[in-house]
Image (cartoon, rainbow, N blue to C red):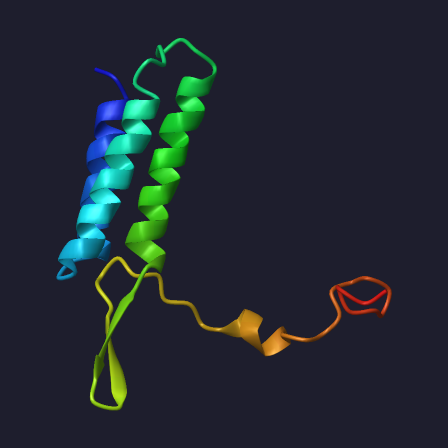
Length: 111
């Protein structure tokens, strides 16, 4: 069995999870996924581009599943739809924002 079919299904499931309750965005995501796979439909499993295309689909599915959170404004606040697959960090990297990045004392974009 081709590895592209499970990657395609996984990507569709991830989009459904990420965009649940938002019909237009889900339809656009499905259309984009379909177009992307159709564009690569002529790739043979033995071609060098094939594994890269499958890996790309798997990585996009992982990002959709773990890092995309939808918010809905209810009054003056936003309600986030966080699900069991949503990655939850501890914000340790945020504490270091604005500090030097090992560039000899200069900030990253300084000349």
